[in-house]
Length: 188
Image (cartoon, rainbow, N blue to C red):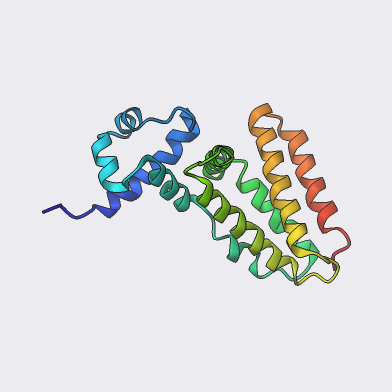
């Protein structure tokens, strides 16, 4: 008889996986070195998560903010700009920066044919775009909320990737501000 899952241990492993991938990358991720770093065995990781890909998908799911709540109560353009800037700041530092770094690696890997991450990446993008589009619908001057949400999410993701690669904080912050301001400008 199989022993029951230790949910606290499982949650601890998921958080450690995100940190490990942020530090070591996704491209060469192998279970044995990951397990050794986490103080467990590859067999235990498979026991908890079934596959390496499922382990990563579940780890990322624990890091995803409640994006629907983030943009749910937007009442005007100024509040939207503030919320987007807060979102940018949260994803460029600390734990949010670690999660964003891993997410960008997964999105890149999802571009490969037959990627095990395509469903996760497609879902993550859809959740972000639909939640932001819903927040944009309340602003009169946004005539195509889905297009504006796509521009903001994809644009900020590209600027974030630039920042992670180049380390240029000032330029990327200015670019993020400009993208947010120009996309939301004129909204009432």
